[in-house]
Length: 132
Image: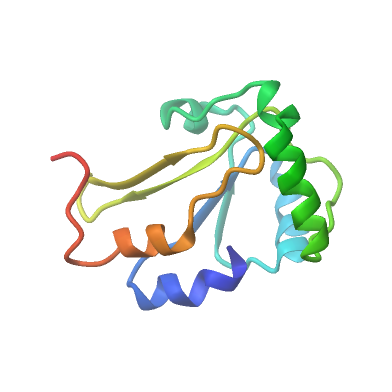
């Protein structure tokens, strides 16, 4: 997400990343990824559960997760040391203004990432909320 920070700022949106490692892992994550925005961690996984994000073994052993990992290596991403719960899958949400949900994506396997263009589009002023 580091390379998209300016686009979110231009869309008047706050980009926030939540991981599940320990607080002591945050500086290493920032250094490894180049992400300098708001960064939090929830080792209890309560926020992941509240958002409906799943935790499952099949998420990391799916063929497409392996292919996604190989593609990431090809694109120059190198894995760091394991931090947090590897079985916890993530996602993306856009909330607000107000307590309205504008975008929701729940990963089904480790390599699932929503198109950033979709997330940015949901940050536009004329984008309707998913639920009122």
